[in-house]
Length: 603
Image (cartoon, rainbow, N blue to C red; front, side, top):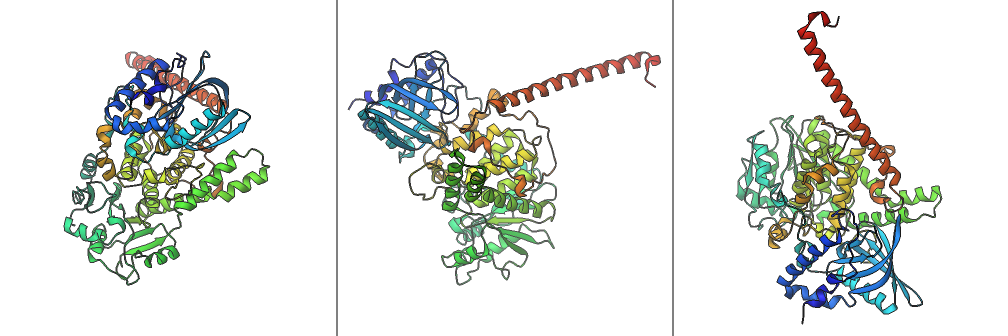
């Protein structure tokens, strides 16, 4: 079979040379078409090299090109042009001058709906970034073929067929993001503060814990054999490891999976030794269990459980209620449904918003993170955080607590390191959790907006402390979009073990390589930022927590006024800096004159 059908859409003469926006609009990025052609040629060469795999695309694209398609998007003019399907993109190109082209990753498509009026077909495309677009396609057969192809291409099972494996960057890679936040480099910072911890290679071949990285920080006086025994006592082999060291008082935060005590009250003295090794003489610690006491009790019947006071007398256990899986997914679906329904009265809108329980989840997570931070900073106690697996709510709590406690995590680079350390390397299963968003027709399995909830919580803190974060809201939105669909390999797979098996660092580009370019950093920087070395304590009162409009309402209303206000704010800040610079210059000149002539000295 020839390779030609795969790339038939690549050489459509209708892809004119229209002016397009930025090269990266995360999961729907557009480029000038001449550059786009270069990109497609590169993709073509890449695909030919792995033609045995990519042949699947040819069978899935029944109609690669349709003319006379009309595109409808929120707050943008209607565009008529040629619709092209490639192995990874839905592209709509127009001959109209100064018209944007649509480049939409198939992996960003959550679901589609088909409608027909006579021979005219309409496809409603609902995206994982919560956008909804409409394509009017002439011809019933063409519409059915396009819909069928989109459904197939947006649900590819093989990770190695996804776009990051074919994407070739059109920008110069100054820094390889895959090597930017290695555990050994992070550990050097810890070594400069304390000598009580070591970097263990017990999991170097991922045999002890599939969801942990090869290197983990553990107490220096606990050997690897002990760690192996503890791993058999913790869910998924997730033995307690260091999450955060509080430089101010030397207290630490650890994370783990639940202990496998079961109904018989199984005990593991090595586990007790490990977590007791983190306590200072005469000090107690806190175990924050992200489940209610009832849920934790029920876990015993399935082989799980919690730490009993008899076996862990130096630790006080606190139970919090952070929901999981289906409940969170259903909450997101209800929230987005409420945000998209424009027909409600105020009372009904507020009622649907409350019924989604989304803000309740935000409050629960923030409250628990504040509790962990309070134990460490104000109580002077070490903390162990776990739920069931230790890969979802646990990571929300440990990462948010660090944002509250550590000003370094509020910088752009520090936040990247936090996401790497506490989410990617810590084994949050992004591939499973972000497989679908709010529009999917499939019954939720392991999908859940865990990471989106974390980003929402960060936004709440950023909004309450607008000058304490180096990054702007745009950075959080960018991370949300790339977690669900991306040309970069950063959020692919479910763990470091899977990423290593797929050779992602060698075969894909890291998102951090894009973000850490000077021009992109400038776009993501918060103009109000002033470094704040203090601990920041966010309010979790209901009136303090708002709906994140930048994500949930951005496709429902125009951002023109907000954009104009933001530009004016930036202009005022820059003008203020200029005036401040002039004041400083005049003061220096005055000081020099007073030095030269004592008679000019101010009284």
